[in-house]
Image (cartoon, each protein chain N blue to C red):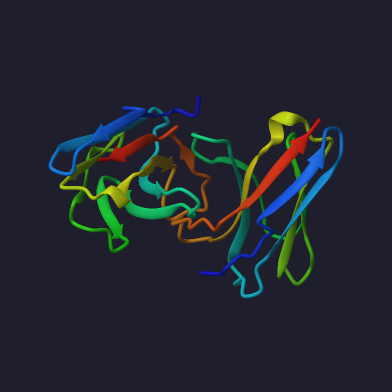
Length: 114
Length: 110
């Protein structure tokens, strides 16, 4: 148990569906992250939030829309995805973004887009 | 951001010491070296972090030479449960946006 909980663990959706991934951290951290891990590819940093403000968007397509309503919760809203978006989506948190703090990851949501 | 290079895969046997070396030739003065471990269908887990010389914790040791252009993660007496992907990252002191490389897939055999 890392203190970062992601739901659902598995998700299957069609290309026309709208779904959301949820992440909750119980560590009192101020920074939260979304990563994407495709098969046989390195983890890709998608979004970074610090104190509930988005500080980085690594050229992620607009069909991925993050939301951070408070420092404990992070969402990734999905719509009109493509099959190539099938991947493991990982949420992470750290005490602060500016300091060299270690990341705590959730177990991820395995997403399949049909 | 300093790029890292590490072997794609390594095999070992139970009880052996495993050393995984990572190259980071363009590491900056303020960069730290951090290693993570990832099991299938899980997120990466922090193992160890260092700046120079040697760091040891209950899980591993990290050796960093004086020029800091490489680092070696040492896992003592591995077991089957150490089979995982190990990532070497170079992280700037003032920027926690960690970017992972391909990692080293370690397979421990009985």
